[in-house]
Length: 193
Image (tube, rainbow, N blue to C red):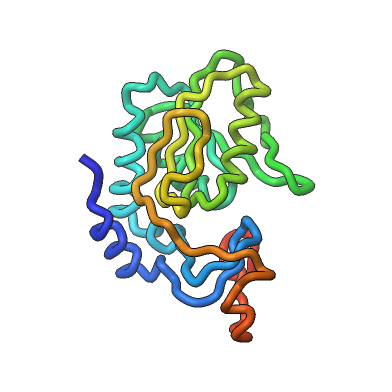
């Protein structure tokens, strides 16, 4: 049984992981809300709780490898991999695109679960899925903690999120917060906080 949405939101609020303001997301879109998963995942009980939901959903998917995008997805991927007791790796950006480094490999035919912390447009996850396909591996599914698209993103695979929300986003040129002159903040792993 999936965790109730309000319970998940309460945990995010309690840990100050749901931020309110004016944010530029990794996708380039602007939003009045930002999920800073690192703030909630610093607490082992919540890391275990949320990753446990993902691992439980994929426990019968014969996963052989968990891969996540650096930086946000690494903690989630590592914990889900530990729970599923499978090899766990991550991809990281080099020259603007996701690549396998550090000697990591995806083996042909391997059943791979892609894991992320937050999905808005799915850009990083789509890049990881491409790495899986290029390796001639099999995509077992995609799991993530927060789906900011409220289910609108499809990875052409079994997917699961702990929390689905339709968070308001705007193109920068159409952003009402910009028009009001409210300074924009770029949080997260590729920003300033």
